[in-house]
Image (cartoon, rainbow, N blue to C red; front, side, top):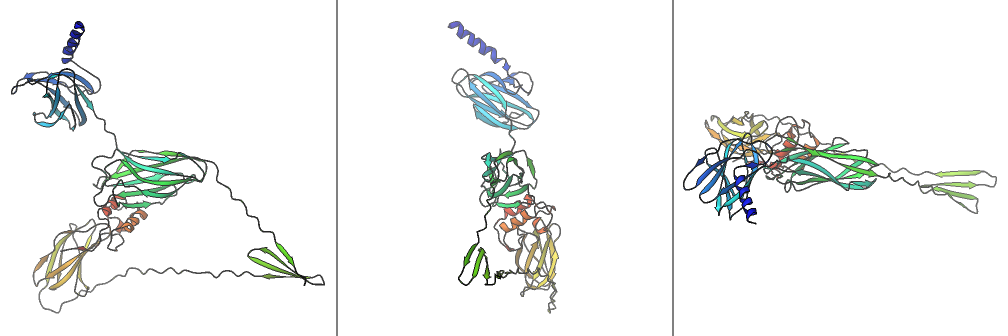
Length: 491
């Protein structure tokens, strides 16, 4: 027993000066000893990923492991005690010895390329320890499509679930899904949006093709998808036997006006059986009724009759009762009058006083038009704002209503008083994107227009970011202002 104990001590001492492991090379360096403060610092090197190292620390002996990263890494350093009552403390330092992070028994961090030091010392106690250095392999975000059940008969239905996986901590502000399926084998219905993007998200659906459809979703009121889970579901009904592939691909946005493709995993559905055949309905057998006067009435169908009359000389007269066709009913579709175009004639003030000026700045993602209206709501003058939104108007002195409009945005409205020969200024204001139909409300009807015009360039009011394509990035702008009403007060 005594020899076995001596052998264990020998092995531990041997391991102090060695490391073992395998995988990618990390760093190389020399060993030196220094003595800061009251503790001896033993400098050592970490030279391989997934390696295991043996060390010893106490109140008077600390160890400092050098780590050189040639590129950014997400990694974890952990310590387990071998002997003694050691509770180890890990301190991550930069190349100048300044502390970056610390942890008891383990430390997880992400650091860019550079030189680092991991100092080990007792939180309490002392003893031998085993240190491990391990890379954390990041799992990429993705989209997956699943179906339940995976097999059904013709005429039966299954539920397809579309999910986002490994969503990063910063989350997604919007996502666009393109789902494909075999229209010969499946019929799609019952789209249901989940709560991954928060309550009341803005949704646009586009179904231009018979074998695919697009679902765009953007969180409203600052909501994002910050966790993995179900985005939406839909139903599929089997039309005829076969193996049907179903897949939804995705592009996501983090709110930076950039769409990023995600890896996708599809699924398949087996449809078995044949479609039920309809049973032909037989025509009813005619009923013949004879009367004492020699007339015979034969009713051949429920919707018509024929009277057959026989006479003593053997002749037969058949009288057909015509069935009246129903009077057609026409529903008149009201004609929508085109939006009137007004030509405004500037009102010339009879006062000889000099004109006044109005300046300001209106921010929007579209060209802005600013106008002045008098007390009778007559437009006095209008001007296109500059590219940066600044504008200047000159009109007779007086009190006006100033209005700023942009295509697809809620308008802004306020009061302005122009003094003779003076200049008044309105505060900087930002117009709210999303009022595509111009009814002073940003709602699902505006989102519907985006869905109907998806990937097109018109109507221009739906192209809120003015990039000549209508898609989820425009929906994202709309969602930021979802349920807002106008005009916005400009005071």
